[in-house]
Image (cartoon, rainbow, N blue to C red; front, side, top):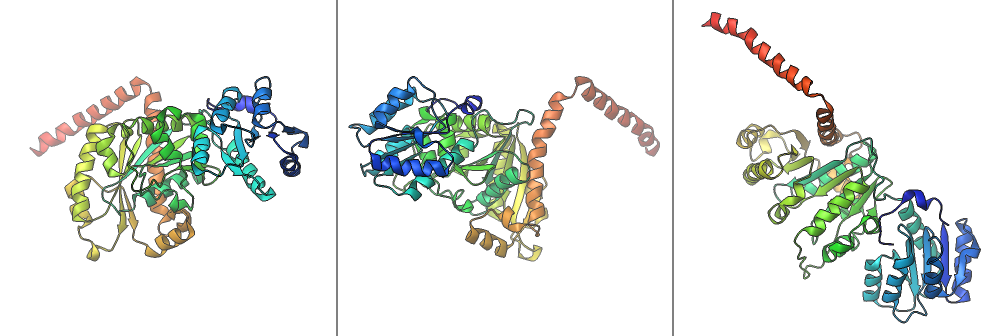
Length: 427
């Protein structure tokens, strides 16, 4: 349950097995199992105790249902099950104890869901559907080996510039247009809107990771992340405001490491305070997308963050994105003055489009999806192209022979020599 997933071994397992305590539950499960094409004979009597005994001498299924009704200490017994259950098995538990704390502890221990008895056939169907999505979802170590991993951090210079809007759109485009399995990690633990922008419930995965960094592994990532679609999974949070998240950053580092192993791309929505508290988060980032607006305050902070990135993430390509760009007559700071102040060009300009932004919020869809082929589509695709090309270019540079760079230098030197006679003549 807690070790990295082995995709090759999963194909040899039974798709489903259940261990229940009463005939009523057994009959309910047999009917739903038949609907899924599973053998009703895989529904066994004996509950959790029989499950532990049986799985200690046999292979674990892809989906395991266990009944905790006769368990005196459900949490301890689930931990015993984890010792005999093979990695990658999705566990659904059921019991009669109606306790939120028990539910949270069981989920934290590795099960996917806990159903309160008595339950209906529809509840079972929903649980099995979610389990099947998890089984077929992104796994640790399954990232394609022929394409380099893309790690992107999206940073807003000020609150409200639209960094999360850009991050969610980039993550969606990375999956839909670049066809890469993508993890979207929103590190605003208390007020993040990453999941909200995709019409998803954030879940407890991120807060559990912060509270228990030692539990983070490939299987934890698989169960903690919420799937937005076939290519995109989200890890976000909505921690209580009166619950401070105290961490040394180890959990964030481990999350990034596991996501690198399990996904072809990671889009990190990085709040500004994280730059101060956990600068190591950008040390392995390939691209830093800096979202700005054309205001005096954003100009000041863009200068500061660009200098910070140069010192702390020299390996990252910095892409400056001006969001909500209005006509020149309505701009607080002109584009020319802004670029002069930050001493570099703006890479991408996204025009202000209140209608599309409102529509995206209402539908719970990323702006890139709502934009379609409209005026926002091109600049958003431009961010994707700059992000992916940065990694592809780096890979090509590493693969290029040393002689190529030497010839380039010689070519540049010859061009300088060719200019000298003209310069002398002019003098």
